[in-house]
Length: 443
Image (cartoon, rainbow, N blue to C red; front, side, top):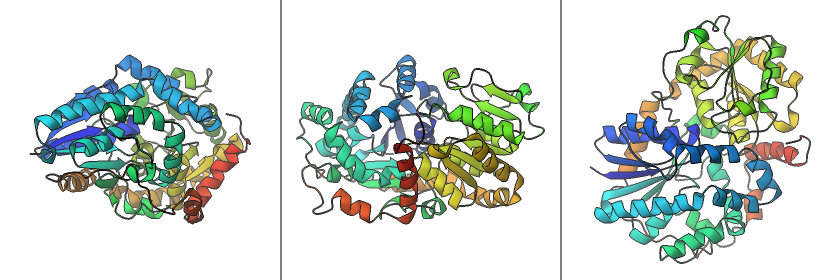
């Protein structure tokens, strides 16, 4: 038996795959603790996973609400990212994880423990690797987490680097002066997406183990309420902007307008009432939450924000998807789904009701989309994906992590050189993002 310490933060797409991974590790006889938000504690405990939370549900809700304008603010000034971390106690969360995990590691032994953390945010894990020699795996939830590494190497010194180095000093660690090597220093990198999704865009770096989408069917299953069942004939469109509030202010308005123009009834799922238009048109029904694993196979199409978990769930359900993508990993996820032939997408710079409606009508009326997505649906297999990830993680047991290269970086590999080597797929996605940045759409 190995002790696995898992760490993640964020919303459903960031946390539910880690809950499923924890469930699989427990099923293989390991001792598992998940460090995440109290909001997800009950879900994790039902999966047999012990939980340690650095926050309360109320603190989590405040953080989610505070994130609504974060994209716009950070584009304007990187200092807003540091302010966001401080306002919401996120540096304290890193300290909490480091301290609590260190107690476990010291009580056992570094070669009896494996730390598994979400890519980019798992900073406590990398520090524990340095200070206590524990092996560390970083888990990527979407390809852009690797694509953005060159950018993160520049962002950290200008924003989060100072506070992170202050934390390191408190743990007796020297400051990071070269962020590239340190941010790549995990002993194992896992990407939770399949080969076909990887081929549809810039591929993952060499050495990243692709294990497939990891859905949490238990957390997303359940009986549909009677009032929802009554709305499934004719098949409606599902509208969901995800579980968080890091969303373009026009998102729900555009999605609703597209459904109205197509003449399709719609089920709008959003627990944040303030994001939804005050007066929904006839035929559009809002619910705070619904079990997507149960619901999605009954809808005609899914209009969503581009989160990788929602994208994968639509494929697993055999349903075409229209992605209104803005920010973070969403444009890249959307572009990959379009290249795979299972959906369409629009960047925010091209959002207008007629265009969105034309794409939605095409998805609903052209049987080719549904045929292609049904062929891909068997590739989304949570059990096989979890088993593949567990096998990789078990391979770290008994190893001792080496000191991270925190003061030496790769020579001669500057940001400009990396941008010149961009994959054509990545250039296409970046072009869409730059169009937004030029101000063609108001945020």
